[in-house]
Image (tube, rainbow, N blue to C red; front, side):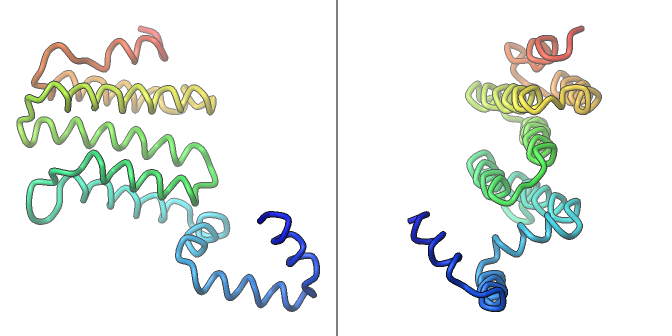
Length: 169
């Protein structure tokens, strides 16, 4: 498939190639978002995805029962258009923060939910380490760990071991 695509693109004239790009841009929303990240205001796109994440946990109506699964889908969709790894790591930390807030807001006692929240934080920290962004996210991770310590309902789960593993103290 890739070979066929390359052959097709190579035989196009410059003007035809421009028209093809414009047609694709008009047809596929994911391409529009990608170019908005590339050429425009990336922060606006990240903020849009953060708002979608918040809505998945705290919808205008109902209880947001599918927040964890929907938030994974939202982040996966963002990963398709993401240009800077920092933005993707930021969304992962934001997801862990929303999960911690949800525990307090809905008085969640479920061990599975607490475990999932701790795993989300650990995954975000591991991603920050892989992208060499630990120092950039250190303060936010510390605040998030403190927030979770205050809001968790099951005392067997904590962000502290993960925080110590990646940031010390």
